[in-house]
Image (cartoon, rainbow, N blue to C red; front, side):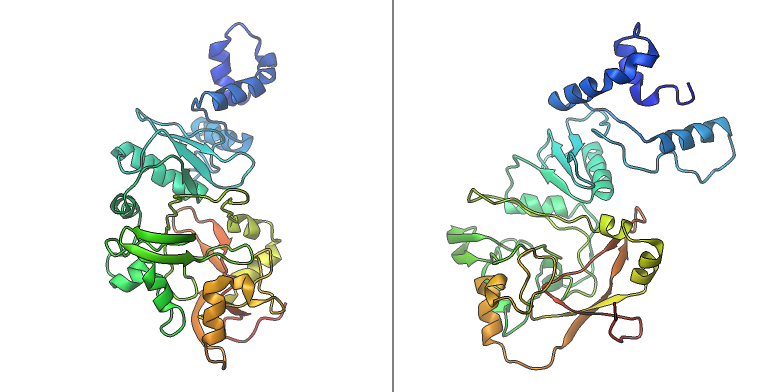
Amino acid sequence: YLFQILNNHGIHHLFPTVDKSRIHEIMPIFRETCKEFNVPWQEYSWRDMFCSLWKNWTTGMFADTPMVTMPPQGHLEPSNTRVRIAPIPGASFGAEVTGVQVHDLSTDELRLIKKSWCDRGILVFKDQDLTPQQEVAFMRQFPHSRTCDALKFCGPLAKEGFDAEEWQQFKLKSCPEIQLRGYKDLVDHHGVTGFLNTGKGAKEFHSDSLHEYDTPPISTSLYCLETPGGYDNTLFLDTRLAYDVLSSAEQDRADSLFVQYKREPSPLHESGLKADFAASLGTLGDLYAKCVLQASTGDVKVSQVHPLVWTHPNTGRKAIITAAMWMHRIVESDGTAWTP
């Protein structure tokens, strides 16, 4: 009665003669059916419903209370559009977008996709058929710098005499914003010919050139053309959740710390979550292992310094952002080494 069966109201209209006290028994079947036939639906937490109802009950009071504070479960509600956006089951972030080709979006579809991107962090578009120019045009509709130089915009910057030549070899000449990655002997792939091998001997979590940019990218696209079979999943970490699970005291401490980065990579632990200086250079893959062996040894030169904790400009959520392969050390605000 208090919440007026808001989460179950659709079932009330489908089965109007069923007593409200039994509607919750139908909900599991309803959810599965919606998922099977890709039917949009929304479901909110009791807290969000109470805040929304309270705001309506007390008009003019708590004007700053948001109507919805948490992302809805299930499909986001489209408006006269083909697009369907479903959060990835069992994950705290990420969503799958179906029903559209990203090179042919309406204004409303793009608006919905941008909102979902802010809410879910990662969007998966399956069965896309894109030219390089169409991929770049799609990504340019997201926030990006319009003033930085072309080399920084296209990235990675890489390091002359270390890995710059290797990366530049596998950039698309017609679309320098696109950097090829993977494992294949390429023959005139959009003008690129050569043996591409950027794989690692450990799991790798990309940090989008955090170690070489003073202002890292806001968004990045990965367009998968082929997979070899077997273990070929792309892995992602919810670094917002990593921050959320810290205690209040730990969060306050993390908020005050910074990370120094370097331009030469460290060997990785097989998990990809940390450096492992006892591991072989094979964990870096052939490209970086060769570069490290050829590079001159010496003192570590710090390339960039970034906060350990980043705050999303739209949602206000905080996240722990690091790059294990490129991290030199965590430091205090005055530059002294952090001691755990």
